[in-house]
Structure formats: structure tokens, C-alpha cells
Image 1 (cartoon, rainbow, N blue to C red):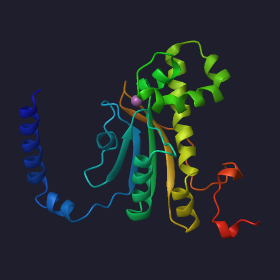
Image 2: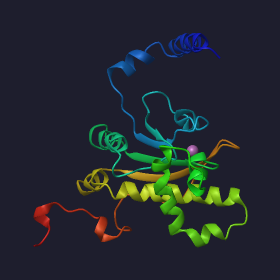
Image 3: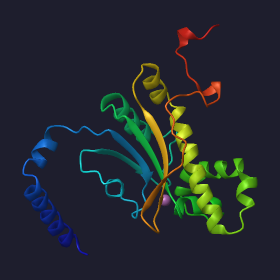
Image 4: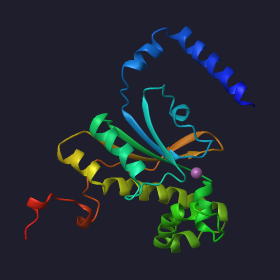
Length: 215
Ligand code: CO
């Protein structure tokens, strides 16, 4: 496909949208009001809106390699802060996917360049779960279980941010869901770790403002 083809596709898509709903673009141009923030992998086979059947305007999206939430990543944190504080999304979905190339790379020792630094944290998740992972017989099983454990880790990382904790403190509704997508059949699976409070995380991660901290 050439760039020209993509421009033609775009024209056809915009025409089709207008045919179905003449007010569609006008409505979107006034505001966005998404209830969901999606944090997913950059993998081209996991298109966020299509997978959950949401239209433009309904899903705020952040994607990076291996759907990682790092406390030093101002890109992800800015998306999170804007989504929670300004857009007031009610749900955050962390979506991993089976067969993730980022996870596979993190489990190996092949050098890929700059991206190795990005994936470095996933190696920590592996080391924390080493006995479980090493007991799995096949490489594909090890990669896929790590894909699930990585989602769990990133959900936990979200609950450790002040952005999420402050939202909960002020009584804002905010649910965090961990899901995993199967490229092989197009289906999402919930990882049953939905959370809307900090009770399951170690107190060392529960932040208090300075005047709440006793000397
Ligand atoms: Co991936």
C-alpha cells in the first residue's frame, strides 16, 4: 500500500462516517468525553478501539512497547494525569497480549539497542517470578505467562502513582482492569485483578502529603 492509498482510504472512511451520522465529526470537534483510558502494546495487531468496539471519542489511548507503566516515563504519566484529572475517565484498562515481542525480547539475552533499556523492567518481573516461569515446559508458555504477569505488574504500578491515589482519596470513581488479548482469536480475557483502592499494596507505596506525616 502506498501513502496515496492511505489518503484514499481516509477519504472513503470520512465519507462513510458522514453518511452514517452527519453530525459525527461536528460533535467530536466540540469535545471528547471518553470513559476509558487504554494502556496497551504498540504491536500493530492490537488496535485498541477496534478490539473493544469503541468509536473515536470513546477511548483515550496510550501505547508503548509491552504496555509498560514506568514512574519515570513522563509520556505515560502525562497521559494518565490528563485522563484521570481532566477527562475524569472512570476506567483504566491495561491490555497485554499473548506472544508479545517485547516480553519475548526481555526474556532473552539478545541485544536490540535502545529498546533494551525500556524492556529492562520486565526482566525484574521475570526474576520475581523465576521459579514459576522456569517450571513451564515450553518457551511459548513462559512468554505467555510473563505477558500476564507483566499486566499485573503494570496494574500495580498504576496504583502506586500519586495520580491514581489522589483520585481515590477524593472519592473519584476509578477502576483499573487488567486484560490480555489473544492475537490468535481476537478475544480479550480479564485477569480478575480489578482494583479501585490501595489496600493490597505495601504501605511504603501509599503516599501521604507532608503535613500528614508525623515527624
Ligand atoms: Co507486544
